[in-house]
Amino acid sequence: MPIVRVDPFDPQPEAIAHAANLLRQGRLVAFPTETVYGLGANALDTNAVEQIFSVKGRPSYNPLIVHVADAEAARRLVSHWPEHAQRLAAAFWPGPLTLVLPKRPEVSDLITAGLPSVAVRVPAHRVALALLRTADLPVAAPSANRFTQLSPTTAQHVEKALGSQIDLIIDGGPTTVGIESTVVDVAGARPVLLRPGLLSIDDLASIVGEIEVPSQHLVEETPRPSPGMLHRHYAPRGELHIFAPQHRDGAALLARQAVEAQRTVGALLLSPLDAPIQHPIVMPDEPAAYARMLYAGLHSLDDLGCDVILVEQVPSTSAWVGVRDRLQRASQ
Ligand code: TXA
Ligand code: MG
Image (cartoon, rainbow, N blue to C red):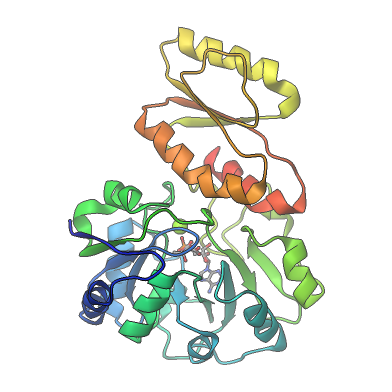
């Protein structure tokens, strides 16, 4: 599997030109964004988009995000560009925000899973932007992992998951945000949060006034209104258990029992725990730094063969909503 290393801040034009050519030929290219690595295909080429679904093992009811180089290009994919879209794009693009808007007929039903809306995003990553500008195409890109598995934050994670099945992986080093973009539906009168991310509800509300947060985000998800948001998602192979900080004794007991049962135990903790955990990771106590390490931490616990992963619950404040959401899904 060809992997090409590029400078994340100033990617080599030849490498980008090569990747852009592959996209134009209908091939798949994995590339870094600031959130996670994406598995990209020309959004205007239905055969290429079909390959994304088959390589990921992703069901066709799960719509894709279309990546573009700027808001102008996003506007060409949608039939309305409401005031809320304009404000959020001006405030956060390029950045870890995806906007859902009514689609133009040219956007295929395959990308939107038959929905009348399309998700668009301008990523804040020099490699992604160089690729989008050079290819001069909208690029459909889900996270570059197999369906329901952990999202990749390094080129090596992509290689491990999808290695032989894609034409090129552009290695731009580890991603900085670390969890997937915040998804907001701006088609209606009131913006609706469809997937929490690192941009907090407060950040969004400061731009659009009010934002609706469906309660299922933190607990349960139905397939609507954001069809991709399944119950179990972003999950490691090991069993993941979340424990509240006031139940550290219980977690230590669980670790002892698991080890006695010959199981390998890993943990994501907020401070060291006195327990026989073979692979403890003490995570940062600040949400952006935690998010950046989250998937890398879970990937490494998977690689170490952990059967059980104990995760200390993170705070319930607005800034932690994205991280809590991913932990919740990984534990189901
Ligand atoms: O950070 C990210 O968003 C990464 C990078 C690669 O940009 N991409 C990503 O894509 O996470 P994916 O396919 O793993 O997640 C797409 C999310 C799903 O939750 C899906 O339901 C939602 O976007 N989505 C896409 N189109 C939608 C639509 N028309 N209406 C509602 N939700 C939509
Ligand atoms: Mg994904």
